[in-house]
Picture (cartoon, rainbow, N blue to C red):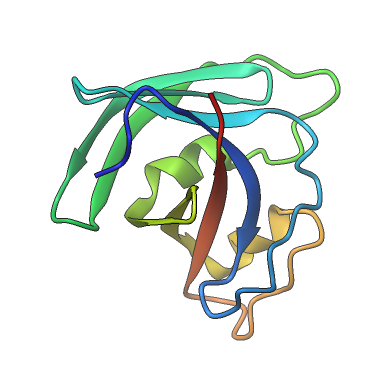
Length: 136
């Protein structure tokens, strides 16, 4: 289970197959997640706030249903798909004070993340991981 009452701060996106591919490019604004005991999840998507619910399908399966406000950020939000990415979470892991969410995106969608490598096949689904550092 994910510790509740903790704010998790996004560190990077990465490919699941590579421990060293952590891509922090474009992550210069605040992206967070916070899980509460009552099944509520909240967070920030740059200058927007997000709220919703979460549930576990198994010891490692996680489902998040949330929505975010849609304020235009200044400066512009470099991760315009962050809110939907969180909602695409399929599983999680806790590793050394880090929360790792695995999500599925369409291959071409990974190109919107600044500096992220293009998918090998260009189409179909791609697994990505979002790595969070434990905050307060």
